Amino acid sequence: MTTSRRFASGTAFLFLAMMGAGVLAAQQTPGGSTEPDGVTKGPTVTEQPDPLKRPLSDQEKIAQRKALKQELKGVYKKWVDEDVRWIITDQELQAFKSLSNDEERDQFIENFWLRRNPNPDSPENEFREEHYARIAYANDHFAAGKPGWRTDRGHIYIAYGKADSIDSHPSGGSYERPMEEGGGNTSTFPFEIWHYRYLEGIGDNVDIEFVDTCMCGDYHMTIDRSEKDALKHVPGAGQTMYEQTGQSKQADRFSGGGLEQLGAGPLSSQNQSKQFDRLDRYAKLMAPPEIKFKDMESFMATSKILTGPPFLFDVRTDYVKVTNDTILVPVTLQIRNSDITFTNKDGVAMGTVNILGRVSNLNHKPIQTFEDTVSVQVPSELLARKRSDLSVYWKSLPLRPGLYKIDIVIKDVNNPDHIGRWERSLNVPQYDDDRLSSSSLILADQMERVPSKDIGAGNFIIGDTRIRPRVSTGVAVPVTFHRAQSLNFWMQVYNLGIDEKSKQNGATIEYQILDMATNTTVLQAQELTSKTNPNADQVTIEKSLPLASLQPGKYQVSIKVNDGITKQQIAESASFIVD
Image 1: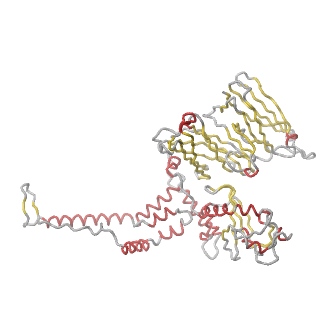
Image 2 (image 1 turned 135 degrees about the vertical axis):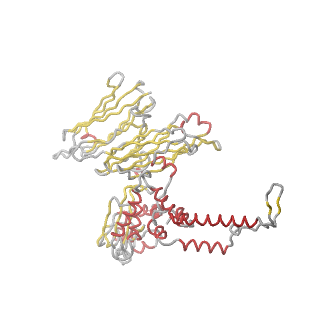
Image 3 (image 1 turned 60 degrees about the vertical axis):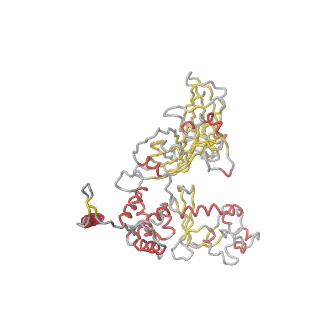
């Protein structure tokens, strides 16, 4: 199709050229005069305005838009209305509809997939193949009087892939409400809850609820968890815990005017406070996935050469067990303020760095991506002093055990040619139930308990502890602490043996700090897990040591665990410098 179109265009050009030559010859008539330089000059011709360049009237603009709309049909209409309906952005859709011919549309579609190709150098596009495989799966599994891709479950599956787990109730029936839904027993319509451990741009631990209120297989997404309650409108049936005890009435569910009609319960106030969060999450789920920092992705996906000065930064990765199948991988970036370009405005110096990261498997398929912006603001008069400081960024990635590749690109916003790239392999460990093991040993400059509301979420938070890792400035270079600081170290130990009779563990943990220059021990201590957390098969080690008593030099902290129940031993160590 493209070849014939180009041939037709060339033929038209040749025809116009011949016609132009004929007009020029016709203008050189015998009636013309000859100038002294020998050029024949024809009669004066009044130049007419070009009708193609005059402004269009409103009626002509409307007619033109209708013509373009009618032209978008066939395969192109199917592509935009069906194939990419759930992933095309509003800007892309508007641009596509403004195209005037099929050649431009073909080029747009090619670039559309290229922008999403995790490996643009490859002739195959893994994203496109996965996308169409998802559409096929949706049509096979979610059809309900309409194609599966048009259903809400098909929409979410096509946009975000397979859920990490699904709580399915295909027949509905008896349902014991959790406390956050008011408690009490009721009967439900068929429903499903899809759980995603992480969705880029949306957050961690995302639950999406689908309800089949028509009992016809057409599950629709809902933000009202009471919608699955089949007895909600039946007086005296399916009462919540508070309704059973007379503390509230069933009619109260419909008088609040909120997003949900869960009824009063022990956690009612929390449900009300989270309504805007649920609306925000729903809006993000329904929107197409964003394509951010696309200019930076070219440096990640290809071997594009950096033209400006390299933007150096340091990265540290750690491993913390969540379950046997999920490992938390905290990634810590360290950027020197002296490498950031600052701008001054109203007495404030500001530097901004965009960060783009991607984790891929061995087949170059992206597993997770993260994008963020780090801003550094200081009073202009303090900028010279603050340039020697470090800015630290932290991202926690839940991954399954296995081998991955991680790419990170950073860009100095105030100096667009200042770009840095970092890539490494990532070997996420497998924690077996019968093997004594541990997390990474993290040396930190800050470590503190967090309020209960912040447990498990937020920057630098692991469990109930906020711990900011110290990042080394090079390969095999120990991290550095000042004597005025404290050395904080954190580690978890997994799979301690439990005695069958006493139901207690029996491990000994030894701590040692060694002066590497003199090979002498400056601190040695031990403790029994049966004294600190006797009934657990997992313990967390959190220690803090003031460094004022240590002389400047290089040291090593070692932790040894001897399990008296399973007769297994492990040891971890890390070097550090005191200046």
